[in-house]
Length: 219
Figure (tube, one colour):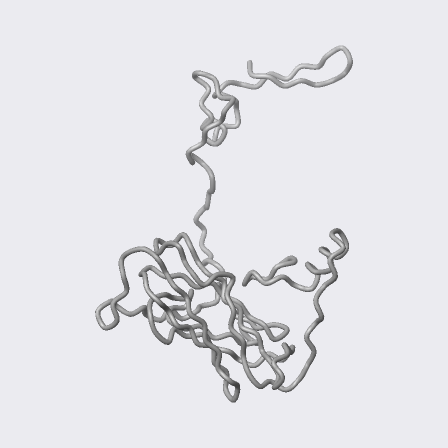
């Protein structure tokens, strides 16, 4: 997973790395406490387009009664209360410490995007905790019309467990479009992945120089 988790949240080793090379101290790490509420923030609250090229990263944080972030990880659900937009799993997504859609150190994140313009209210909930909401504005066309625009259908998460095994050979890269800035006339860059190990279809020539070095060239 590296220094950033699968949901684009920096892990503690990223803060160590930043402190080591940029001398920026890490934040105070959250500690265990008594969960009382949630906080919902975003890296942006306006999406400039609804063609799939813009999104907002939503971050939900578990708080204690005084509003301080804590490391407790109860299950948390984000859902679209009104307006357009969707999560990877549809109109809602649930984070759980025991699932692939995880919440760690009292924090979870996911991307939100919309294919319709309008105002979206997103709500974060967890049993027994205070809710949190955030408003996202999506610009562009078409416009979301409540009651007329088709609602987003749920897309349940399914863990990837591998492709079915069979005896069929699988090849990647062969005959893919290839261009090279150094290609010469009659020597297309696609020859690099045409499946022929010989350059330009000719037998390679290997020679040895007087100094004992080996050289390779097309015959």
